[in-house]
Picture 1 (cartoon, one colour):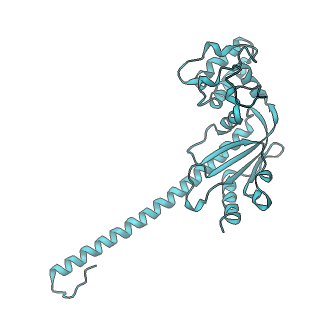
Picture 2 (cartoon, one colour):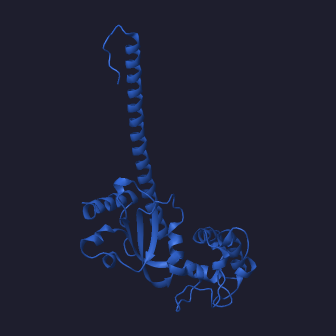
Picture 3 (cartoon, one colour):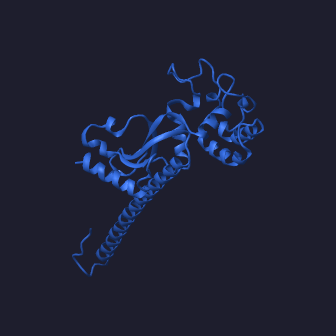
Length: 261
């Protein structure tokens, strides 16, 4: 910063005043950046907490498979911000048992290989994929006696959410168009637990939170105390254990306790 050596030198005085103004502007900009950064972090935190609440609601709304327990874990240093995939909800399956709504979806989206009817044959190729066609498929199911008319509106909305992003290529079974597992007798759109994951992800915002459906429990993933990185939020017997904000707060605290030293 230019110093004033002669108070009577107008040029020195003006240069000093200009430097003071520049420094003040820089401090104000830095303070604003800090404020916006904190606000951004708060917004990301609020968003992921709301997403956990959404998953909890989806768990209670009869997903396609019977599920056993759900956990929240922090996968990356939260001090650096909640980036994509930083928070994961791990959901353990309870066997291979489908729920009543899951069975109904399988009936509607079957074909001549395994299904009771071939409703999909009338819709394959429509723009928007299976999700957009789902209301019409459900109405066809009502006409075929597969879906009760009283359930049509509920299942149309529900199944459209479950099938979001599923292209027609995963809706035609053959002996070559299957998941790689030789013993798999399901549908291509059910492969690797993706149907249950999609069902639990309906309504999520942003990309910070991922939902993973798997057999592995926290104790099988981590030995010793590190399994406590997975914070229980729901069980099939007890229902909701923690709300979204409490779950995220505890998951971050466990990360700092067990990982970041």
